[in-house]
Length: 247
Ligand SMILES: Nc1ncnc2c1ncn2[C@@H]1O[C@H](COP(=O)(O)OP(=O)(O)O)[C@@H](O)[C@H]1O
Ligand SMILES: [Mg+2]
Image (cartoon, rainbow, N blue to C red; front, side, top):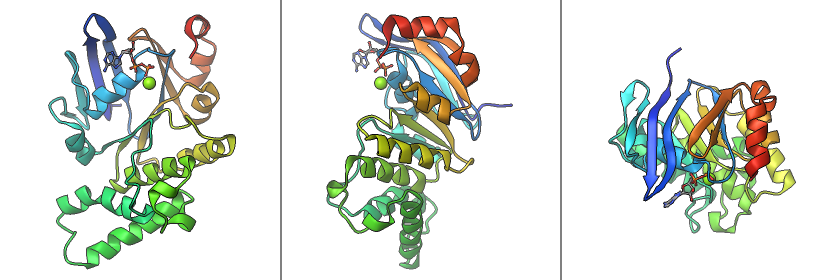
C-alpha cells in the first residue's frame, strides 16, 4: 500500500543539537498513527516538518504522491494536511460558528464558490453540522474566547475538519483537559470519518492504545520502534526507553 504521507530520512538540527536524525515515517490513508516517545524525542519537531513550519536540513516529505517539501503550512493545509496545535488557536472574539466558517474559507475560495451569498449559507450550514458533531451546538453563538479549554480544543478540531483534510496532525490534544473532557475527546476522535488519516502525538499511552492502529516510537530524534499497539506495548526496547526517560 502506498503512503498518503511519506517522510524520508528527515534530519533537523538546532545548532549542535540533533532534534531528528534520519527519521522515516509512512502514514496510510485513513490510518490512526500515534507518535510517542519521551520528552525531547523530536515528536513535535517531526509534526512541524510534516506541517511545513520547520524546514529539515535533510530529507523529503511527500503527500498524496507529491513532494511538498517546498510548501509552507498554508499551502500544505490547502492540499489536505491540517494541524491542531498544543495550544488551541482560535479567534477569541469570533463566535464558534464564525471560527469554523473562517477556517473553511481557503477551501471555499479556492473552489470559487464563496460568492454569491448562497455559498455563505452553505458554509454556515456546514459549520453548524461540524459543531454539532463536536458536541458544540449549544455554544455555536458564543465567542470562542469565552469557551472552556476543552471546548476550544473541540472547536479547533471542527475548524481543522472544515478544510476537509486528508491528514490531521494532533499534538498532545489531551493536554490540560479534565478527565471528562479527555473522555469526550477520545469519543470525538474515534468518530472521525475514515477519509481522514490521523497522526497523533500523545504521551498518555492509554489514549494511544485506545485511538491508534499503528505506533511509531521516537527517542533522541531517531525511530526506536514501529508496530501495532500490541507489539509496542510488549516491546522491551520501548519499556526501557520509557523507564529511562519517561515524560
Ligand atoms: N526551536 C528550537 N530551538 C532549539 N531547540 C529546539 C527547538 N525546538 C525543539 N528543540 C529541541 O529539539 C528536541 C526535540 O524537541 P521536540 O520536538 O519538541 O520534542 P518532543 O515533542 O518529543 O518533546 C529537544 O531537545 C528540544 O529542546
Ligand atoms: Mg512536543
